[in-house]
Image (cartoon, rainbow, N blue to C red; front, side, top):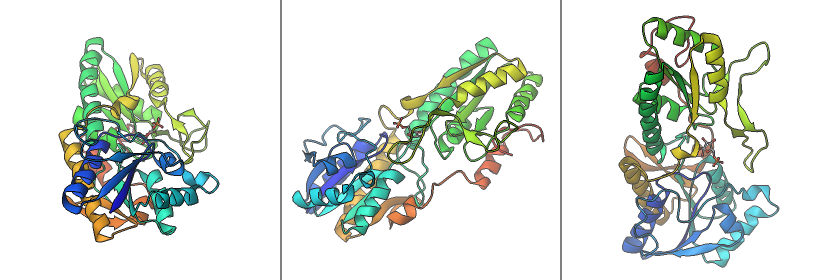
Length: 358
Ligand code: F6P
């Protein structure tokens, strides 16, 4: 069978491990041929591809990024985009397509499926916010990077009696902030799911310093929102750029700087902001992500040969299963109240302070 593969959306450590898993099992067990479309959906619209064989996937397991490159191209935003994708697949005699991506990439996969294309999805995002799967690959690596950064920031914060505010990725969901905050022993963790009251954050830090601590670590997700106040009637995230990309996303960023300024003004504690940005997405995948990504790849090629189209490989209770793409893209998997309550157990309970959530 001739199978197409693409990687779309923001890159993520483990993409190459998925490609390798698909290609190796496809060639060794099913005698498949592969074509890799370049730069996400752009490669399908413009018919840009490269052959994928055993040589092409040799040595890529530990490499970050994606040998197919990626983009945030949305065919649905272009005239005839979906039809052009279907035409490219037909021209190249592609019998099935494996799309590796997050909710944006997979929403296009679903549209193609509705247009008769045989497509299987693989869940990718460091944000870990895709529904229907326990974990997406890339998340573990990102948490390890952030955890190491927090460990390093601890020592410099301690040396200078400072508050360090660390901004991490997480547009709609605070999984990276929460997991790396727990792993790094943060004193305050702010996530998009619970708008925060700046005065209560300041009070948490004052109380900690009154208990004899002279430094603090605050982890904040880029999508965390200041709660509604006299200036704005709605909780809103801090934007770097309000212009929307092809999937309707604004560019977030800068919340750490605003927070650091406010914390210093309200507490008098010297405060610094650090934005980790794309460092979280770059570099080699962790061993956990290499294994998870490989299992997703092996699962996806089996799904193709079982004819499970319009579906996505998912991890549930440590098993790779197949779920409808529709379920995966129906909503973001955000941090739930039960998890927030559990993590709040780590912090002193006081009405006028905010460590994670209310
Ligand atoms: O893919 C999700 C994500 O990691 C978000 O957390 C972040 O807002 C976004 O990617 C940034 O991506 P880029 O700057 O590459 O468009």
